[in-house]
Length: 530
Image (cartoon, rainbow, N blue to C red; front, side, top):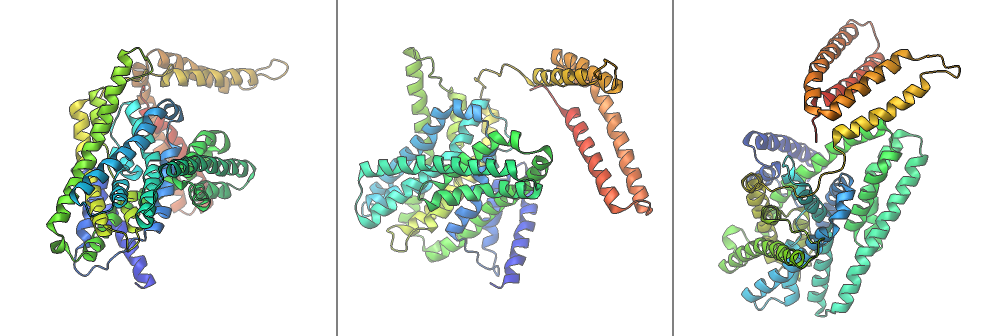
């Protein structure tokens, strides 16, 4: 494909992303579902060029930034608190699903080597971070359930990739040693944590010393790829390295990044993540065409392969339910025996957690890396696409309805301070500084308006802490007036600029001030008690 044609195709895909995303919003679908179905349907339109997705490039291009985005916004306190449950899903459930799928496939196709069966299991076992984030956007979940799903989606790709590499090596060499595999698994996982921590430490060191804002934003954006590639370069888990670096950056960025850098970098980052997430699902749909063509078309798929594909899809779904509800039974028994730390989710949360097993980019890219002489390669490709389509389209589109139907209850104890109390505490700290600095060394009041302004704010915060709803109802008309005043100021600014009375530089600077002021007013007007 010519370079210009490739660029035009990319622009076309971006236009398709916009159209399908708009359609999903209109139909109240998860955007991932519309993108996946739309990409798959468009791939078979006659005359369109075939798109081949390089698997290694797909993993390096898409996975690090999307993992980093999830890790950056992860609530680290809840992540640590629920780490046992997260590891149960990210390691235990993935290993269990891999084994069960392998047994089922070998039972149906006895001539396929055991290791190849387990390689297929490793391909379809890890739920995907991209799919989970895309489907769960806008869905309100209990905090513990949200922490489990977020943490699982960050770590389980590493488990699936490691198991896949072990299985492929065993298939091609005919040799597998359990002890060596466990040691290698531990080395790869712990090594990923160490590498990710080291890369994050380098980011902290540079971000604190660089004076140029653009350079700070650049190294912040590049951190995900630096961690992933560094991990892969030393043969440890690039996924775990990226997640570790993302968690560290999310923890330290409050102290290191200025407000200006954070606002500007986050805006660009969110646009990039949106485009990457959307393109992942479009390209998954497009790649289905190539996989079907490689086996001779849809009509060439034998009945025996269809049976295996259906069995794999059903097994993947049931295995997750079995693992989660089995874990629930163990936690319930342990609690009855007096272990207070054992806290079952309850059937409502367990049902939602069991159904939220969407697969995506890793399940797509990994089978494409299989050697040509790998036994069952075509079967693995078709199974991978089937699992992605069924989980994203069926589970993803019905997850919101399931949540509304079962109404999962948040059993986590609330934080000691809600938002009104936290804002009141901040207001008291700010007022204490203003009250101290409003007077000179002789005790003369030199900032009376500032002191009065913050005293009024503190009085309001005391009322807001006591009754947030009533306080905001009384204050919103005040913000409405201020927003209308800002709009009038913006209109006048544009008028004098259009009349040629001010330069563009003045327009941009004053408009930025209005934007920041309007954003602050809009956020304050819309805040509610949490």
